[in-house]
Image (cartoon, rainbow, N blue to C red; front, side, top):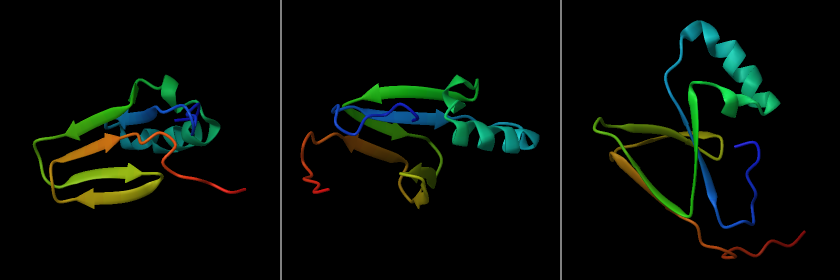
Length: 88
């Protein structure tokens, strides 16, 4: 999520619908430009906790930009505010 903040206690969840193959380059450019949220193929949710599920297995998703496959059909997220100390 282009406007996500690391210290607001809210997780930004971006859900992308299937899009036509030929739109791949356009979607990629919009992701890099930070304008993907305006796409009709993208929905943004903000929450302090969330559960994402689907009927089919496996569940395919990206977490922090890394593609992952989970053998379950649901994921649960919870923000732990100020749970990590970072020294710069």
